[in-house]
Amino acid sequence: SGPPEPLQTGAGSQRLIAEGMVSPDGASPIYRTVADTTGRDIWYRALRGDTTPKPFEVTPADETMPRFSPDGRWVTYVSNESGAPEVFVRPFPGPGGRTQISAGGGTEPVWSPDAKYIAFTDNRVRIRIVDVQAGTIETVDTAGNNLERGDMGLTWSPDSQWLAYAKAGDNQLRAIQTYHVKTKNRRALTNAF
Image 1: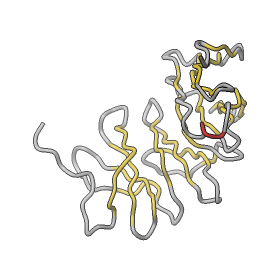
Image 2: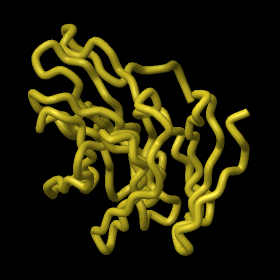
Image 3: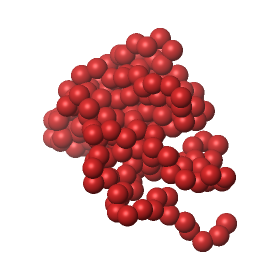
Image 4: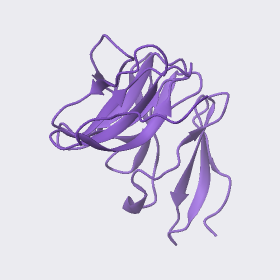
């Protein structure tokens, strides 16, 4: 406890800090900054010991949406280096390279609590799940409309068996849907009124 301290300081090189998350062990926040020269980047720092901010992913492209795996060993994030947003995963804090896990665009990555799956939405507004060990991608559902891109509210059940999300109906109102990972069954929990 004590007075708040800034995550980053400097001569205006990082003007905005957003999309922050603390590692599962509570030792390191990871966050997105906006820099004059490199755009949106991902940084982290320790909360004890050497608290100097360190770059996690800093490139001329935009990197956003950093998310720790439940065990804190991996981070997913989104980069538009290819010209379209794609989801990547890499070890935290390193060393190790990154692996692209989306194909055809990707945003809104969410780890399952058991760290076996990563759900995301792609550029065709499909909800997709990556099996981390197998490296396979399956399409769960297609959203109701393009307005839902990046705003599906992807949420895992605590046992990692169900993925819940919001999907627009023909009237543009949303219904809560669920998908069971093992049985591949989808069902609506609410209607779109």
